[in-house]
Length: 236
Length: 234
Image (cartoon, rainbow over all chains, first blue to last red; front, side, top):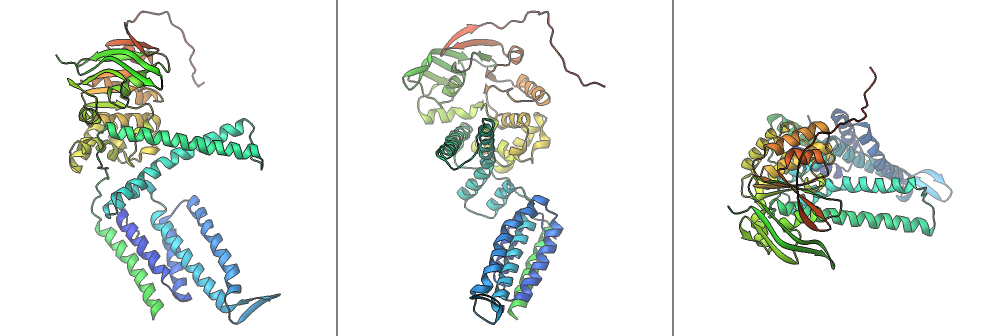
């Protein structure tokens, strides 16, 4: 039920995350979380993407640990001068459910897409062209700069460099960063020259996208319908 | 007949020292000129001077019968010249192959459908139509080089400037590249260390050393030849 069309996916992702952010009760938030989990399982992302969730869940765990002690209410557990409240716990659970729902929705809808392909979809959605161009070019060259950084690090390690806390280490890292900047600048200059040689005059090509199919629209309607239902349930 | 490109007594300096000194050359239609010389002799600078990426301190650059000194004059001539860079990643900046090949035609006034049609046609002519929807940074070195060439050919240039075109290209894609260049009916200047490639393609050669050009001769002579081979054991 996830639309194949990237424009609809992007719009659906924004609407679903916005809807999740507006939930105010634990019940509907838990229902949304369950649905988001099903959606993520259906999208079948690879293991690396699930692992990326840990960054979000670390933040959520921190919330669950601290928020109960920060919100006043009926005491649940006392640790010396600190007491955890029931209200705090339920607030933390609500937040955790909402944050996780949003992360799962993004994982399901956008996690499996090659990021650079989103450029054409963003352009088709009438985002300002310079922003889209910046996005696309950043993605295109981030990988190359990352590779360069990795090769430089390996060359340093091959000459027995180990990071310590001393002047030599800081100076070496300074050189590494400086070298990356110089190379990136050089590359930017060459890319600009290549564009000029092919007659660049401000028109950047973005592939024309085929119109979404009926199947895409059905998936989109289903997703946004579920989000609306969750919101309605929350408000009743 | 008016030469396509010509340099007359061109001197290009980097700082105080000249990179090219008293360089003259003419390229006529259907010429395939090889420029051969050691690293740092000024080969790339020569190509860059021809398209106006370097400006000479003295001397004349004429492109298609027109003296060029300002950016505007060079800009007018550039769509007729295809420059293949040494590093393919510098040239492939669009997300997908088709978008990149359509970039040039779009700049010369084609509509998006026209540009994409021309892109697909060029890719098919090079035998790489199957790459059209691929993401450019996930291609192999040889595929990247061919896509770069497609991006230039889609602009239907009259002259190709090739800077080390066979560097980092595998055998299968190398064969496609040779076939495409052998079939190109315009003029070209090629800079390469690959002597077999130069001898196969070029009709004329110039030697460059310390920023100066001299005429050279291409000839083939038989060699008694032996070299080691590596084969997997059955």
